Amino acid sequence: QVHVVESGGGLVQAGGSLRLSCAASGPIFRLVVMGWYRQAPGKQRELVASIPSGGSTSYADSVKGRFTISTDNAKNTVYLQMNSLKPEDTAVYYCNARVFTSFTNVLDAWGQGTLVTVSS
Image (cartoon, rainbow, N blue to C red; front, top):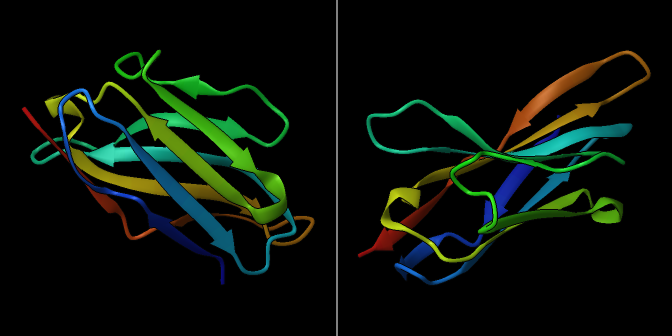
């Protein structure tokens, strides 16, 4: 079973920064893509940023220029550096890892989520 664990959430004032970390572990044959999603109260979960193995990063328009996603592939770890935070960034942030556990079996693994609260 593939496990995904996030860390780094917390309370920060508007304009501040936070760095989220996410580590995937377990029977990972090959990493396909890792991404960060968020869900604010009363809203649907949305994709914030993603980074495929060996590919280019992508970002939601609302975070472009403020957030940066990066990986340490040797550790199956992904980071989300969040700068210039705004109150509307307040949400539970979830990490997703899409992995092959064998030549043919692919699955999506989710973390438990980490709360980011930005005060005005």
